[in-house]
Length: 307
Image (cartoon, rainbow, N blue to C red):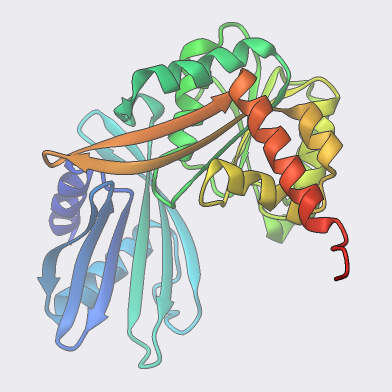
């Protein structure tokens, strides 16, 4: 099983897959890679081998191999030659008590370089870091590399500054950053870690995701206090970021004060090569966008004249 799993890991690493799925089907287990180009079914094992492989993974990730019914989480530091990977393992059984495994591959930052196009948009994002304060927000589909983009600009365009990250979970390993991970079991959610992070007085904070109203308000207040904050939001466009934060109850005037950049990116393919299509709005373009959004919202809320 060690050799079998090693071969799966080597192939996944070569594809730069973000996840490996081992799922039961009608006559065994299928192995699926998820990468920038999408889902790829790569192997099929009979039931005996599939179950043995899952036991090997669970044992190596310090999970209970005798427990099948309840979901479990595990971790594993894995080496492929000189390449270091951090594996996050999740197991769950279906209604027939057949286990499935999902393995998230967490690469070192230097092993996770994407191709951003057009290049001037990435440079525009990097230039925003010179502002030293404010809120930069990035949206995009799951798996489009939002966190990698934020890590890349912070790693390559910040010198001698303290960068603190808060994620759920940590997706990239960057030893030069102070990386904190959400742990709800220990009552350390985004809100608690954000409050703790402010006491460390970092120059820049990278927040994995703004996913609720309380986090949104704390992030905005932190940006108002003079911090530069980079974060991601689930939205379908740059405009969607605004509506998402407004839905969280963040006042218009505060958004106009703190937001210094909005971006949207998606993973694209050309000639079987993947790249990140990044579009940023900052400076004059951002100001015009914010004015348009504010006017549109004010008009929508205005009472309609009766006929």
